[in-house]
Length: 186
Image (tube, rainbow, N blue to C red; front, top):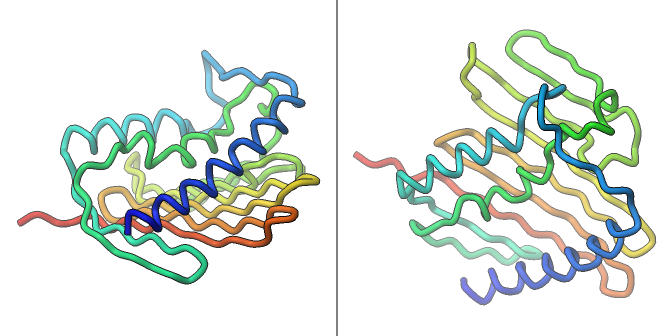
């Protein structure tokens, strides 16, 4: 299990290095300090990570890499690290204040990217009043070196899943997923 996690992490680190090189060529986009145009993904997942760290939640975690899976019960999760892909999908940047359409009906809020150059393409939030029932985020990045597609799903206190498909030039394709099912205490 640990070797599979290391393999997945090494692939992620390599892609992160490639992404850093690509990001260095983009203009600096700062976080919004005041009014937020869209749902605060960063704030929501940061707060939930802190809550889950305090509660020392146990999950049954399944890591799958190119079809090979391993499952283990885990109770020492650093939730800020675990939610990093969710947090980095925040769409509240000043330059993006008019970059997403918003549909709001029947407890669903849907944000869709207006242009294909935005990494976060879709955010779907299901609410029951003020309570978040689920969040689904679709990300897609492509450039000369790689193509990356992510689907991030979170049902608070129930399950989270990160599904990722990567195609790196000269290295081939990789798929992996991480699924954590919250362990219910009696």
